[in-house]
Length: 510
Image (cartoon, rainbow, N blue to C red; front, side, top):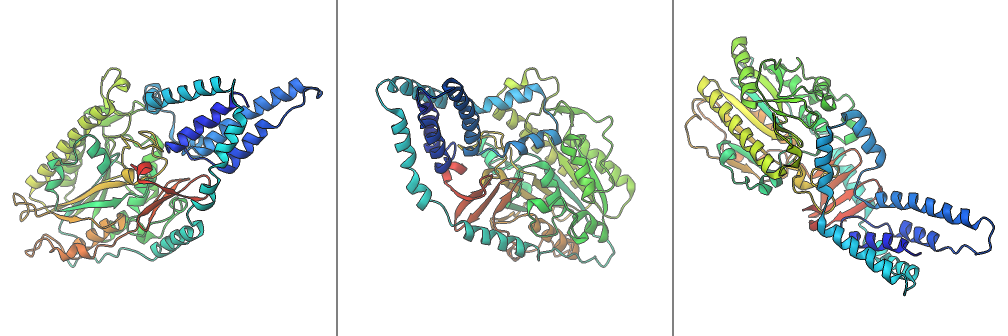
């Protein structure tokens, strides 16, 4: 087997460090294929040897990808074709996240061992023994796939029955405006990673969700799920099909008396984001951004506009319109991976965490400034702050920083908050109610519908603590195109390209 032993020992090392999986059956078959002796006197022996080496390289790469936590290659290619190619600077920055000096040094040491030991030991025998030692883990260590699949099927069956209903106010329209701030790339784990999890920003909100699941880790699916938030959670494969009208929040907002608006601080072209909004009943289209200050550039060098000035322009337009009640969906990519200040030199070489902290500080200041602007207007406003997904600043052993193919809890668990702005709330101490139960989008729409039905801006004021006890809970099921993570009996399980359930350890998640 000669230096093929390095391939297997390196993979076994990565497996024991939990960087990859290890399919015992396929790896054992591959090792046996490489150890089949080729007689010295067989005809065309040189061609056969060369052919086996060439085929072995192809199989080795394919098997390594199979054992990795990465999605199928076809999905990666499809993603790039549909989303567009980022700038070369961003690609450089992204690839550098995979570089781990300690791991590379240890793999180098394994190579040296295999090269030296090959002269004294029969490496093929050693490789086969090591692989076969994992067979008991394959037989006895795998979770009950059928039971987990039935649990997930039952979850989605139950979700199809859940719908948030709205009752139109007696006055014909709500007595407040509604602002939904959809923020790209912000999870609790990201704030912890940059030391901002205790930032006072969230103390100004009346309701704070600490166990909210965004379900997905990508912007397109996230906006679809939010804009269909009146209905229970759908499978990923179903979100691109038309849903019942009652599922679309902007349709129901219009039905109960809101005038709808859509505003972004970017052009919405990447990933056809603006198109996804339109497809999910987000009409009219996004507000014109001409003349607004550009504060950053995206990883594809498209402009990112200042959050405060973008929001304040919408507010000016809203006041001029004279509408009795308005609702806006606002999306910001200020925190998006690869974003950088306008004119920033060699941004791709900078400290990602330091840059992220700067962007997050700016975002918090802009949103707070906008809240103050709303407060000074004298109007009643409900502000909903909900991230799309996290940034994955830290990453984990199974997924490099910035990668989000596997929807792990540190990426999907985001801070969601709701603030009430009005005369009886402005300037008063906020008595925040924390919701720590597992929730998702249905919880947000449930609260909004109850505010529409019974306004929190009446003399009775904000509902009491029992109000949050009846908010709908949602079990943890997170899903992307080819990966699903579920929580069952306090354990997390992953379903990926292997089409089987794998239990994830806390070490693999964090």
